[in-house]
Amino acid sequence: MSNVEKVSPAELVEKVDTKIEQVRTRSLDLSFNELLDMYKNGEFEIAPDYQRLFRWSEEKESRFIESLILEMPIPPIYVVEKEEGIYELMDGLQRISSYLHFRGALEVKEDQDKNLRLNGCDIVTELNGHTFDELPKVLQIKLKRNFIRVEVIRKGSDQKLRYYMFKRLNTGGELLSEQEIRNCTIRLLDNKFNDFIIKMSKDPHFETCIKHLSEDKKEKKADQEYVLKFYAFKNDREQYKKNITPFLTKYMEKVSDPTRETDVFFNYDEEERLFRKTFAILDKALGENVFDKVNQHNNFISSLTPTHFDSFTIGLQEHIDKLDSENEKQMNELGDLLKELKKDKDFLSITARGGKNTVNYLNQRISLVEQKVGEMLNGQ
Image (cartoon, rainbow, N blue to C red; front, top):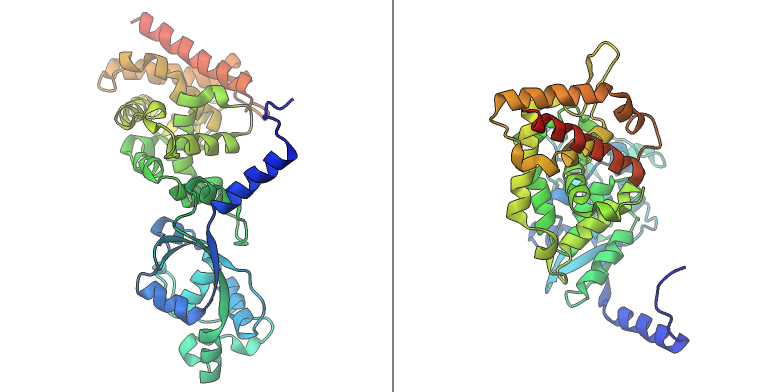
């Protein structure tokens, strides 16, 4: 049964009304040309980390431009008012970026043309092959004057309610990874922890240890998610049930919420020291193979195994002050131990195959690593 406090119907309505009043909004109808001018003048911002998520193909971009030319209805975009008259885009990235790309105003990748040339139009196929400057003047004007509804969350709105609202938005039509969504929305609470995670993801020892993470996953910020996973399991494991996604999001919210005493939850200097030491040790012990499985021929299989990540990173914490990455003999022994663990039948039974993401299996494999490392240290 839920422990939620029961209130009367009148009290419930009052609480809902109070929350509604705390989100101050306004709706604007702006032309795409106005948005372009605002973007150029720094009055309409797309955060750099957010802008890198623009992944629509040129065909999708072209079909969106075709929709504008044909005056088809399009969903609104959502922005946050940072200060009076300065907006930051939070939802609608694909649509706005497509228009900016067609107008030659978007910062694009090296392998992309600065000016989009239409190549995916399937209703008026004659549009294909045209850039904006090559369109007839009447169509250029039509695009410039085409309006879009802009939902503005005003600066005075309650910070936490703004965050939860944007976390629930899902109108972009392009699947983002959970970490990409966290990176975009957490800024509405406080970006300090998110910036810290990004910083730690660039640690050279960490980068070596996750070298076998696929490039596609890295592009979707999986490396940053592994940093978050390290801290969430290390500091908040008792809250983990089975589903990793809400667990990581809630931990990130807990640390980032400016209404909490965040120092209680997270000591940045100490956490940075422990992170860097942990991955320096794992790098010296097994390097890029530390989270790989081992096959029957005793060779590493080059693929990062999540259950090895949480086992080894968290399993070292009880003994972290007794381990020294500069002690070559100790690191060689630790490397041998971790490789042997990868073949150990008890370790395999709680890490291999599906269904091993429960809290029971997680605690078992962490405890096993703690035990084995402790035995190694006691035997030195």
